[in-house]
Length: 250
Length: 245
Image (cartoon, rainbow over all chains, first blue to last red; front, side):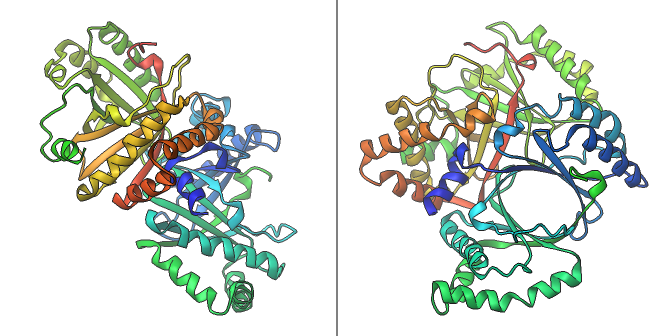
């Protein structure tokens, strides 16, 4: 595992990219949010349907210094899905002409490319349609890569073995480009804040299963190692809410 | 090796036999990108298209905090060439595109030839993945040991991976280097796995079993906290001096 991740982060072997996403933070002009959502929705319906190479998902950022801004995420099946020049495509031109005027100057940047870590992710068999995401962003030390990923992989395997279909889907993405340091984001799906609270109350059963699989005390030990692998102050929790009318698949 | 790079990075007075580059971010004003690109293309064609003109290259930044903006790079064969100021070209630049952007950080780089490898090239590789690395100057041996051996392994294995390493001589905070990997597109980047594996095998053949993993770990240990930033760039040939191939 260590070798794999080291290669991913430092040598970026392309074939390790599975599902790929490109995200950017957008600040909408005061009073223009409804217009932004309307025009972004039109653009998405016209150019990013299920038959397109990539789909777009639009999120409202609920917490943190970017609260109130938009997080727009383009998802493709692989890195090669992004070979079309986004600034020169018909969809890109439509965006610049119709959505661009609702965006504050120089506030649609901070673009990040993410690769999905399938071995560290888990979803229930049936999609729940939950619109809220609790996102935890981490930055870990290059020298402690193994400790970080050991826990993320094991907890995903534990979820699979535990097979509690009421647990929230967990999706882990690693930053391939655009971040400072080794950045990872873990998303948890929730219907709302109350649902998130209820989900957390199911954790003890999951941790017991972890110890059953990997040995008594292993959950606590692996969590501690994972925490030690982090850069100082490098854990940020944010909440996001999907805006379906400005997203693909709506 | 250690002495060489310590001299270069700490005293920074010598670029002997090495290309130099000056880079700056061009923060383009909202809605002005098309006009900016037209202006930069025209200026470059007029003032930077002959062999003895200053050579300028332009990239669009695809990821990170400066995404969508431009990265303009001047490359010269030696440091002394930077003493020539293109008064006429600069005046034209100010007049035509000066109001369309703001200039960001300016940095000066020297090419680390021994840590670079250029395969035989038959086509343009505009997609550039840049790894900006900050390392602990007391561990520069470990950092450069890996980079030089890796370039040599690619050369000896004859891979198709196009890789250039430059070290920052001015404008950076701390000891910094950038490694560029050039690809035709993301599809080619995705398929580069086999070529990289060939270099890893050659590395171990040249420097001993498990040398690659050992040296890589040492190199990772030499990095400063959060000392690794990856950015994607797209080379824009119409806005650049002609390439030599």
